[in-house]
Each structure stands twice: as C-alpha cells, then as structure tokens.
Amino acid sequence: MDNFDTIFAHLLNIHPSRIESIKSSKTEDDTRIFITLKKANLSCPYCGNNHVTSNGFFNKSLKVSNLPFENYLVFHRVRRYYCSHCSHTFSDLNHMTPPGHSVSYATILQLMQLLQNPKITFKYAAEILSLSESTVVRLFDKHCHISRIPFPEVICIDEVYTKNSDFDAKYSCVFYDFYKSRILDVHPSRKKRHLHQYFQSIPKKELDNVRYVCIDMYLPYKQISRCYFKKAIICVDSFHVVKHINDDLSKLRIRIMKKYPTDSIEYYLLKHWKNLLFDRTLNLDNEGKYNKRLGYHVNFRQLLDLMLDIDSQLRKAYELKEAYIMFNSSATLEDAPERLDEIIQDFTQANIDELQEFTGLLIHWKQEIINSFTHYKGKRINSSVAESMNATIKDLLFNTKGIRNNERRKKRIMYAVNKTKFTLK
Image (cartoon, rainbow, N blue to C red; front, side, top):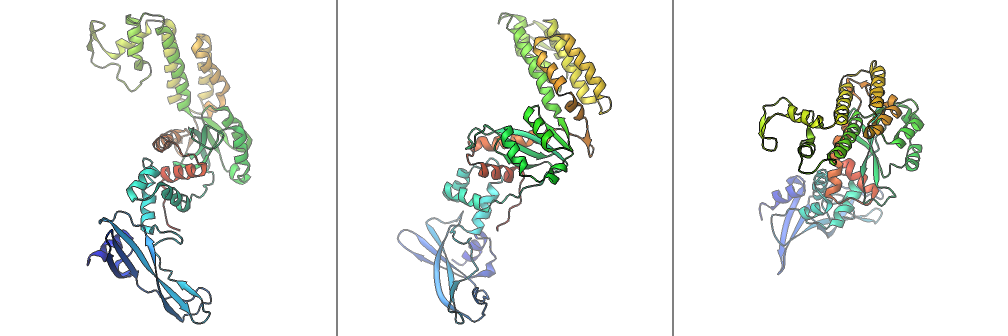
C-alpha cells in the first residue's frame, strides 16, 4: 500500500504532499480506501473566529475513474470542526469533489477533456469513466459554461440539420466569426420569426458593429440581415453559387442521359464519366489509357469532348459553367458588375431550361454576388469557415444521434468545435 499516495494523488489530481494518510479495510466483497487530507488552517465561516477544534470525521464516497484495481471503494475522510465562539459546526473546505457530488474534481476534468472530442458521445464517455450516462449529462450541464461572444465586424450565417431537436424546427442557425474561425452562437431555428426574436435581444450597438454578413442564398437570412445589420454589406458565399450551377448542369446531364439506351456509348459516357464535367482538379491532358468500352486509348480531355459532342446544349451549359467559375476566381470588386452583366446575358441567351433557375438566381442576388469579391484583412469574404465547422458539427450530431435539448446541444457544439478552455468553477 506504500505507493497508494502517489497513485491516488495522480488519479485525484492533487499533490501528494496534501495527503495525510491512506488506509484500507477489506470485506468479503471489496476493499475500501479511506483518504485523509492534511488539516487546513481554518477560521469559522460563520463568525470568523480562528479558535476552532476538531469534531471528528465523516466519510464521503468518491467516484474515481480508471482505478488500477478491482472491487475498490474510495472514501474521503472529511474533517468536522467546532467553533467555541459561536457554537457552529462545519466541515473542512479542503474537498476533492464539488459540493453535493461524489464524483471527484479529477474525474470531472477528465470528462470535460473527453467531451471536447466531437466523436465522443455522452454514453461513451460514461463507459470510459465508469459513470452512468445521466451522471455524465448532469455534470456536463453543470460545469460547461459557454459565454456569449459579441458579434465581430464580419460574420457568416449558415445552418445545420437538427432533426432530433425539441424545438419546432428542423434546422439550427449557426453564426460564425469569419476572421477568427469560431462559432459565435447557435440558435435552434433558422425560421424568420424565431430569428426576429433572437436579434431583438441583442444590443443595437453590437449589431451596428457588423460591417459584413456572408450568407448562402436562403432568402430569410437576407431579409433578417437587412433588418438588423443596418450598417453591414451582405455578401453571398461563392461556394453556394457554384454549387447551384453544378446542380443545374447535373440535371441537364441526367435529362440527356435518359434519352439514350442504357447499353449505348452515350449513356456510358454520361453516367460513368460525369465527374469530368465538375472536377476541376483533374489533369485533362493526362496520359491516355485503353478504354475497353470504346476500344482505343483515350485521355480525360478526349472523354470530355466525346461527352460534350453528344448534345449541343450540354456543351453550351458546360462552357457557361466554366465561364462563371473563371469569373468567380478572377473578378475584382471593381470589374465584377460589368463582367456579371455579360454572364447574365450569356445565360439568358442560351435559353436552356435547366439553367433558368440559375439565371434567375444571378439576377436576384446580383448585388450580393458582387459584394462577395470584398476582401477583409487580405482574405476574400466567404463561408469556408462555416462549411469546415459544419462538417464537424454534423459528425458530432451523427455520432450522438442528435441532442434533443437545445441548450445542451448548443453548449456541446460550441464547447467541442471551438475547443473551449475548461476550468472548474
């Protein structure tokens, strides 16, 4: 038992010098460990008198995780004191657990470190620490303190799917700090009426501090931003615009593909080589390989040309898509208005059914698309920070099968994704 001081000091996250004694007693079923800490210099918490005397001990159960022994129960022998001046009794303030808890501070610290990993569920953390899931949830609710972060100059607004919410909404609205890459807040609904209630609780001075708001093309975000961010410029995230044109091109590809028999060369090209229409990271001029279906050597560019030769509308739509991506990557805030007008004209004249939605989108969101070429501290304003963090949030919600309680879900998301520094309070 000589090494118990060091073992338990480590498990309880206290210095060995604080331990007065560790004693054990065996029963038929278990071994009980009684830890006594050294006496502290105390004054009476009721009258402040320093003349207090010992009044015995009481045993407080300790839940200590990762004990290297089996069938061990741990107790803290807590001193009681008596004040001769005011006749009050009180216990030693030198505790190893929070008031009213049997779980040690060290175990709570370990729990909160585990829960910073988005892949760790409450249930799994409970299994690791030999606690019940309800205890883990209760400890997280009690000890996870997330302070609200004021809105900075540039924010991004996006949403995540939260189907298991106990709120009347399928999507939660997430606010991001564009420059510092962190989550600012999570609201349980993206519906306009709920966002009105949310923003009405935020001081006007803070809202007026926002200079830029980056959103996807969800109309209520635009309407809400105009209403509350009076001094801000609204930008559309360029990724979402490109995604729309790719989706429309894909619809056109599918329509054309369905006109051909499934055993035809046209169907084969449109189905199995569709990535050539969208993946701009591919080297189209790669070394050709023998294609069994075609019966000759061919590289990616030749395959793409064969596919575009199938239908003139597909070729035109692909060229328009490439023109927009070139515009998106090379335009400036100064030349974007003129260049975007030309693109809108080209899309309109093409008169392709599947592109009508995108043409309307360019017209309706024209100013916000132009605004997206704004740079803040050397970086073009976009929602890449939101997309990156959304992936982590989605993983967390998938692993946990959703967290119904909105406040708990918000705290877990912000705690895990922002890697919030934890301190016991």
